[in-house]
Image (cartoon, rainbow, N blue to C red; front, side):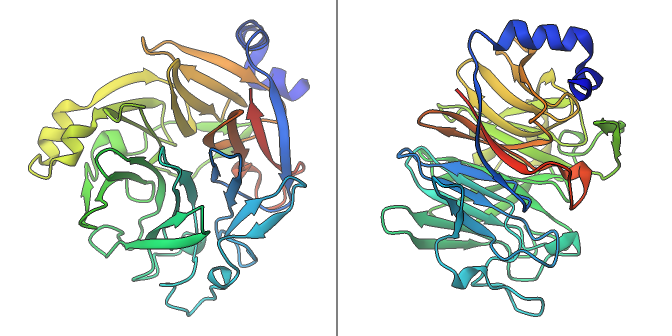
Length: 342
């Protein structure tokens, strides 16, 4: 309780209680001694997580989280066995996120930038997995025009109706638009203020976070009409019509003219669109916040277990999210968690 008071203050606690208790229940799903970031939940309840290679000891990059809390390599063990010096084309180098689209397909995003020491040329990729057969059905590769030497492809959303994938680059600050039919990917809004970190101070649990992280969290509305994103080192949530992003004839100037500022949402990592508004991982507050359609920002739930809420996933029985505890270093005092909002 002491840490929660330090985060939110009395007003924040009262707001959290007033807005969350009648409608929201926070539940523990699993814990881990290894740092996970991404999470994906299938319509049948299967859960997948990933562990980015931010150290030299990452035995599993992508795994299925079983009911007993254990993680088994997914889709197989062979893909987990990258070692420095390997070209990384057919194995996981540094997986940052996993996502299940509205058609029930699993996507695995590998920016191939282990320990943020530079992209392994030829290794950045996006894998499409068929959950019925647990096999990779297609691999989309990103060349050096899309994944720059210091890029870090971070999170993704898939518009099934148009066959388009939208990806954030948190290393250089840009959006990537991938056409699934042709396999052609484009960088857009590279260097634009909306994809860049803001000049702010970030303090989480009293610990300054001094890294610069550009466009990070991303969300797509159910109709596929709007793409939302935000820099982690920033306070501003933006959105843009997806029709503009899909049109290769629109240059960055035309795209920039259509960007809308949604809200000052605070420092955030993961995002998730819901009919009631965009869920935002409140890093400094240790909370999950909601940006309503009118731009109002409110605390949905705050809890001492919410330590650096990272990625969201919509499941059949609630909203799941990971806690990555990035600001606490490689040995945090509490385990990494998967939590569920009912």
